[in-house]
View (spheres, rainbow, N blue to C red):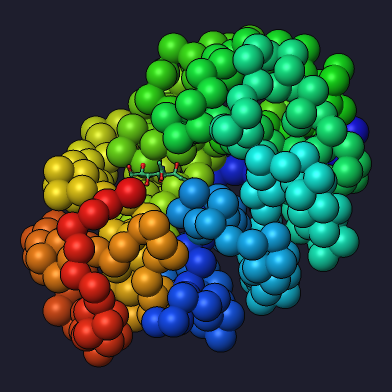
Length: 330
Ligand SMILES: CC(=O)N[C@@H]([C@@H](O)[C@H](O)[C@H](O)CO)[C@@H](O)CC(=O)C(=O)O
């Protein structure tokens, strides 16, 4: 069985793929982005080419280059780099899995194929097994995100006996709000050393109670520090403080969700908070609107997530200048 250096735990930032205003990948800022996550947010694990990273909107060649850049820039700085290699084509997924192994990634993750869909657990496991076998030395994570894939097979069912089929199986990235399913994944696999990574940032505290060993999410790019404070409070059993942190994070997420929140908005918020230009999303997504950015900025400030001195308006102005202003969110 593949064994990672240590179990993947704590916060894992679902990285954004920075792009130029012309829609090409902006590799030049990835080194700076690594330093920002480690030094400013205290986040030392990353999940590359996932939902937030627009992995499914990139070509295979781009995905390979992005993965390589993160691994190279993260060397001796990050603890673990997990590459999402899911694709509709098994061949492409296997190619990406092999590539992740070649470049020295710490693990791979795969979503369920979402066009011609697996119709039951065995069919899904069979697909995952074929991908995992292309990187037999790499820990394998199943990325459960039914709202986006439309594949509703319960994770609890999938995990039942999975290591017999996929010996490298190392854990689950659970991006769903069904805490019964999540809790049962943990409960039924207590004797195994799986990583249970929760993916709904606004509900993380509840998942910690259920036994989550870590979390993968978009907001850890810019709310990593606050979320780490919640993890620390939970660890020292200061549940009242942990709850206060979760509620504060919820206030922000609740606010942006109501405005329309997705990858485009994440790119805008990260540009604002970090000062690193994330650029536009790739079509069909469109840039966040100026109105969204102004409202999000005011909210971040009022919640104490952003001081006036932190504001990186220079970058934001260039972000906005080229925006085809749209309220669309995905
Ligand atoms: C649907 C979605 O994008 N969910 C995010 C969350 O971090 C989400 O942005 C957050 O909980 C706010 O709702 C992550 O689960 C996605 C993720 O980890 C990824 O980019 O692969």
